[in-house]
Length: 302
Image 1 (cartoon, helix red, strand yellow):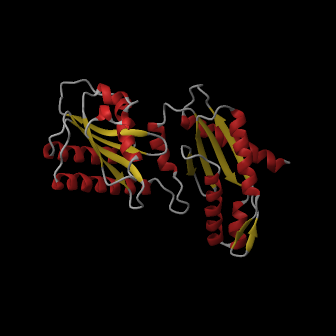
Image 2 (cartoon, helix red, strand yellow):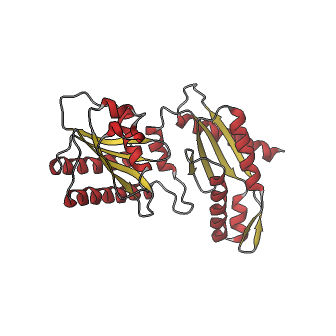
Image 3 (tube, helix red, strand yellow):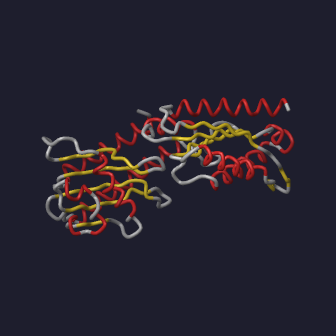
């Protein structure tokens, strides 16, 4: 388990330990949501003699809280069997729980990144103090998530950094990935000619163009100084990633205007994919790195 996951799970466990003594509810769920997955960090079931409940049954409830976070400060459902949003979810029928109260976990920028979900056999009635406590714990968890995200984010570009990949290795094992390794050609010349400040601004502009070429579910990483990595989830075949790679190469070739300097750069791109062949994400990254290096060497020899 990565230190990122461990910190979040420790925080979730403390929140559950507080709430289970403070509230008389049957179940407490603490969940997070990011670009790779929605997952339950901690689940408490007061009926401790029951079998563990599959995450696949619980995560849709927490996702509903996250998706509904724009509608109000908390979500209350007194009868899950009579709520249209839960009609197609097996949890409503299989959990033997009637009611739900949910509070979204948000960052300081008001982005919903998790949920605290309370479940009960009867309608859950929280007084002002109880509800305020749940909301305060949600704010604290939001701070923890934000701090952990800062530790896995590149300070210059705002993209994920290499530390975040250990989290993806842990939580994306069930996904099919295609990997694109991008190296900016002759970037050192930009620093030598215009200075490192302009070089940093160029990297910011490159990161912005890369963001335009990926989906929300894809993982975009600043891998090194002028190296970027994109982990695409569930692309259909090689034609898809080749098409995306072509668009990215063309977007980077477009001139950049930085502090009245017109700067032109290009990119060497290596690609690898598993398509169900069993290669790990770490192996795919290494393969894409080697493919990129081979392309760069061939271009030098031309």
